[in-house]
Image (cartoon, rainbow, N blue to C red; front, side, top):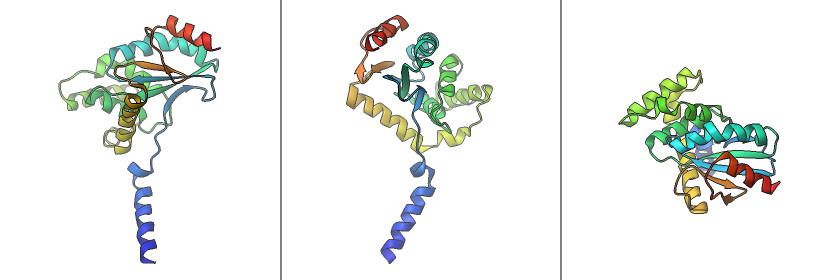
Length: 193
């Protein structure tokens, strides 16, 4: 009986502790049942990743995502502490919505600057508040589950796909080896239709 009480106590602690109980939803744009699934490994401080979000993503959204042809899942591959913390905000108190992720890329020049983690965090919080995102910034920064989820994305990318730079795109599980332009992606997608 004592053993059962001990097990129940540990289960209660584990379930009441957000770092154990919280399920982190992946950030996805599009229909989960789409025939073509893109996965993008990216770092929020990467200027090439910001370029993808600003110049390639809008065309993908208009021509393929909104029509239910493709879905895009965004995987974190932080290149530094600023990117790790920005990824925490993108996932925090989020149900898989990509709005804050796109916002952070659109405003990358405003927050991805500084010489210390504190400066980056201060800039991040200022930018997020300017976008009226209602999140508990300190809670997000201190969330160990989020940090583990983000770092596991990076580990999975290295182990499973030999990811070593950002952005790296997978189309239906295969690395996209061409330059990451809309024209090149459109051709690759159309071949799979």
